[in-house]
Image (tube, rainbow over all chains, first blue to last red):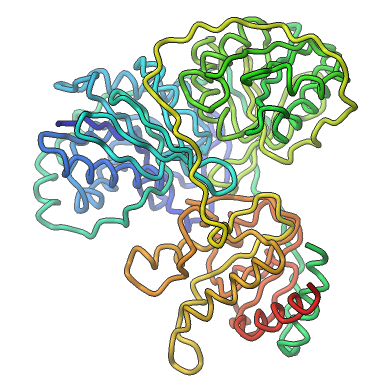
Length: 268
Length: 343
């Protein structure tokens, strides 16, 4: 059984960078945004690794990675990702960042998916992170799914098991550290991934070489996209100012610390 | 200025007899917003039998709408999206509030698209004033923004703890039944998979979040790692005080990399950039030397303390209220002894 898996993933500032907001002509942004080191969005990366794993298990399957961002930045990050798993990049040249409108982003990505040559919509599994590390709204994938007419959607996915008949069992995170277990009749479906079950694949130079043949020219063909604000306006964007006065305790014994902690914790 | 009308979407808990806490928090937010804007207020209930939880809303004086049927007893995109769409069309609201539960977070964006509206999620506050402005975080709780929208209907998913839960004496109410057109369903909900009792370490209502860092599995002063002892210490502590367990990414990832790891930890325990940002009154981090748990994972933790061997750990400074420079193995062993003596 062959699967057509489209993974939507954006590039985000490296989590270790300090982020400072600045006001721009088109709304808020990040200071030095274009030169901040970037990585593939962590939850979307989980989706990509799960997609590649699934495709490898099902002969004839294919993975497309659809990503919106400045094409030079996309190419830079994808050079790293291409060492890990097999995919075909579908870049869309547009603005980066969390302050854009999710509805506009979804419209652009849905158009890009609709334009993928050879993609069978009836076999489509649309993957992505359940939330991004930028906007963190958890809505873009749902909106793309609606635009593509997909009525079976799952969010916070940690596991999928595809059966021989094309149906699949899926585990979604719900409250209290539990999973909801569902069975879907099969593609098409939307799966917003949490961390999944797979570790980050090791770099594979041969994989990288194979991916480069399509990856290198792809950004040059990236379609430009402008994002509508849809009436979204920001009154303020700021860094949190919570700075606590930390008491550093160096001279207490474990017994004394334990007693103080138990008193602080109070009752159950 | 457009006259606003407010709809609060709610859903029943697993018993089907009561609304979830998040739903009741959204009701409080809806009442306050509708009152401030002099707007009409409706409350929609998604449940197998909406008349069961509805009496708890008697004091709201809101128009109550409900969908009913076994299809709505379980959370599923196809049925929940259809239900919420029907409720929204019936209410004709310009602003739709709902809790950020897994159930509504799964469908709310899709519903907003069907209605030609827009959505913002993880709302932590709705500002006072004549216009509607909301607060939410960006970049995983690193930047906070206040924003507004001109487009309607505007869907707002409220984070837990943003408002007090609505509470009043139950009374007689009338629930208008809203019909829902359901397409043939392709998804069957099997049920919930709950960790075994010993492994149940995530407790959203706990008073304390206990954060375990990678230091628990590193070599100790005797030159050996003591992961088994660490596991026992942590489980004893969780059992004794009912705390919820969070973990740094590095500790959870050790399992995937084949290193010794605490057996009950999963990615669901992970807090920070790629994990949860839980809300608890107090937090205690141990053997943790990273930015993620202390900056992102602790954003919504009230009082914070840490145990660390590193007096120069920059990530606890300014983030924790108290840092104890001590061996967490020794301290937690004594903490457990005191808790067990007191129980």
